[in-house]
Length: 288
Ligand code: ZN
Image (cartoon, rainbow, N blue to C red; front, side):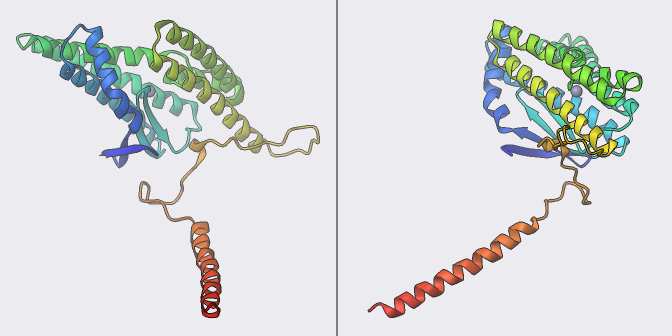
């Protein structure tokens, strides 16, 4: 919702969230101010380079996920970064590790490519060289930042995938999520000190997402274990996580079918309206 599709790559819809469109001028202004460039157009080019890089990072995750036969619902670009929405998480920790590593590897690759381009074009205009260097640096930061063990970011996923064979999925997720929340609190404090709204938003997002994913794993593990009746045990309740909507109806990415209840609602609505129309007609006929 509130996002615009800008195209498809490998059948994956690439979407831009409305908040990114709103924040883009601010981000452009900020990048040009930090780099001491007076031109806002240059800032926009750098911001465009940043979000194109974020998109390619997510595409890296997505391509590896697709190779593991996991569908990717969409890639969403937000001011706080990108999200590749996978239909499900891989069962196998090795697969999770590979999917998580793919993004930072793409970002490292892009950093090298843009750094080389800046060197090759060293005879070119100064603004272009600076732009290429800034995009290279942003990709390097993207790779490093994502590798921090703040679950559910890439580094946290790698950490969990490493813990899972040792401790089991539930305990591994608990430790990874707790570490993620600790990191999120640190980011939040850092963001507050720097007055950076986006850093604070990233921190809040990581904090909530870590908890949500832990609850999801907890729920699944309980379901898998089956129910032994225990009157003092809380029943397992599915967390209302959007990510858990597993769409099995092929083909993917087609418009979703109208749910049956909507059809039913429409029909009963017509029935109700007919009753009122009849009553109204009746009343009209009676009144002089
Ligand atoms: Zn990533």
